[in-house]
Amino acid sequence: MKKPSHGQPTEAGPAPLIAPRPSLGDEAYELMLAELISLRIPPGEKLSVDGLARQFGVSQTPIRAALIRLEAEGLVVKKHNTGYNVAPQLSGSRFRDIYEFRLLIEPAAAAAAALLATPSEVAALTELAEEMSALADTDTEANYSKFALMDGEFHARIAEAGRNTVICEALERLYTHMHLFRLRYHAAVAMDAVKEHDAIMRAIREGDGAAAQATMQAHIAASRDRMQPYFNAT
Amino acid sequence: MKKPSHGQPTEAGPAPLIAPRPSLGDEAYELMLAELISLRIPPGEKLSVDGLARQFGVSQTPIRAALIRLEAEGLVVKKHNTGYNVAPQLSGSRFRDIYEFRLLIEPAAAAAAALLATPSEVAALTELAEEMSALADTDTEANYSKFALMDGEFHARIAEAGRNTVICEALERLYTHMHLFRLRYHAAVAMDAVKEHDAIMRAIREGDGAAAQATMQAHIAASRDRMQPYFNAT
DNA sequence: ACACCCGATATCCGATACGATATTCGATTA
DNA sequence: TAATCGAATATCGTATCGGATATCGGGTGT
Image (cartoon, rainbow over all chains, first blue to last red; front, side):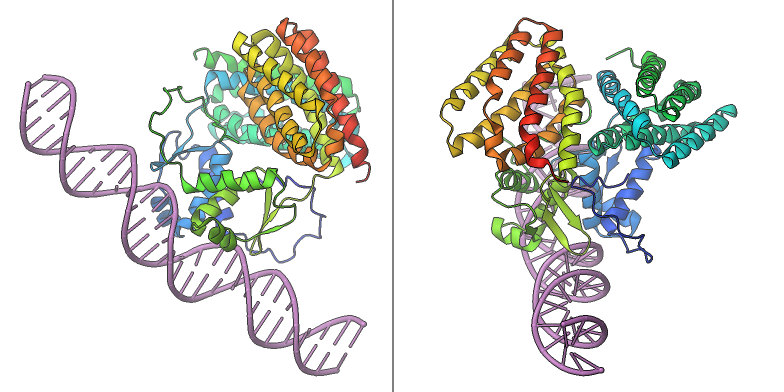
């Protein structure tokens, strides 16, 4: 996950020809994020600063920095004088809250995208949708998680095309968490999503804001209903 | 600002009778947050870890922690090997993005609040609205900032009454930034808001979701239009 | 058998000192 | 004047230490 630049976008300089070494804190963050979103470190697990420092071969300072950032995103929880733990699984009520939130935001973002997307953005989205479609044919274990990642990117790209950075940032935070429970319930990811994605893409390609909004809303509601059964309790 | 507990709400234990000493990192965070939202440290200002550590009489460790958290909220920006600076003023485009976002979220939250608010929540909201009304009569410099704070709390409380923590957290992040530019342009805060607040409160008291949604939308749009002139450029 | 108290261990929080590296800014030079 | 070089400064990260606290175990008493 990129660091959200909350301020105005820094003027896009030319691509840095020599990659400046990022801070160790940032690297540690990226590594741990990868461990978390792949569930290689299970929810609830204790995260010892000392242990992680030895494991990554760095001192505690960068580890601390990474953990603080992860806590701000809700991926780990901290208890004073006790340390960090991987955040627990999403509760049913939070699941509902997230989908309610998405239903407010994403249809609007899709409508904006239909009006504002550049041809290259549309092309990229179309390609992404096709890759997902191809992936859906052979549903192996490995493909599930790849599909889940691409689904997150698909929605993120649509939001980007909507040209509202506040919306993008808000959704970006959610996608990490959504990805986690999509991984938990492979079956429900149900690659049914591809047909709905096609409908959305058609609307965006035609610049039809109303249709984009409607199809996106239907898609999210359908996605929620596919997952819902797993969260009956709570 | 409270630390958002992204996970499910921890079961509300009884109030801790013996106050556990918070970590110095948390205290440093609170202190610096207060400095920032009051503009006592102006935007763009350099924030030296060493300097802040001496100023607060603590070591660098808690200061680092506080700065990392503030960065995650977009209140300060970090450049590798250069340090931290207070985030710059909001740009015009970000201003528009924020209001677009609020127009999507807050009317829905108000509608939910109209249906779900408990009597005590309604009472607290009513009282808050009345205090603001009283404050609006004598508009001194000091009252402006107090009013701005209460306005933020008013909206936050309504969101809370809507019983969607994801929405609450998303808005909470924005309110800090909104507060900052409300402070910058006192004049535009224009305590006109009180009449609009009354309309919203009436709808919530009567449990009229549709009216709550409509009045909230009108309120935010009006607020945007009051501020808009200050952001013509960019 | 159960509850309670107490001590050992491990960990976190924070302090401090130090080294490596990058940025900044002034001085020198063409 | 403009550009280059070098020293001062600050940050980033390391290493280490001490105090405080949570956790876990064993022992005692009822």
